[in-house]
Length: 174
Image (cartoon, rainbow, N blue to C red; front, side):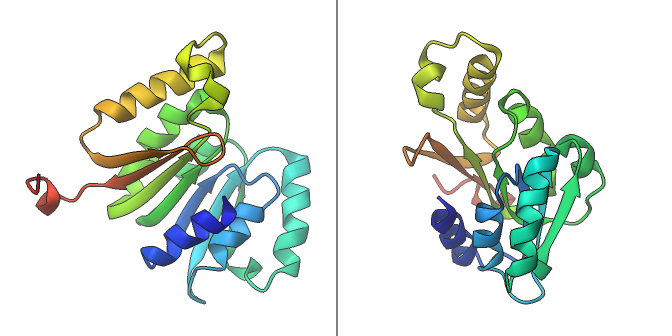
């Protein structure tokens, strides 16, 4: 999946990326490697163990200088950001997927990508039972009805939504 994210970032010539959910930092560094020297990737996480683990790899990587690690709740971190992003990757707490999406969409440039991981959730979205199942199911329904983005759901790993923010001049192409 990291190589897929890198491929997408290269394809759109991304200079600014936002990631929600750093975990080990593998995806972060995969995307950072696609950025030009003056590019930047903001990555948000609140798990101290994941942050410490990822920081070690960021220090060792030749692309670590492009990484800006924002510690704390992602929705709070997003509020502090300004400027537009070329690409975002959502892979944090599933119950906030819709909130993350709505917070990120205004910060996404026209034609920019929002990539969302785990949208099939092991099939649990077909018969949602717990809070995360229901949240992802509702998120998927929200995206399905959202005319602000072009969308494709890929069955890579546990399901990846690829969303492209529609620009005003593309609205009447179909």
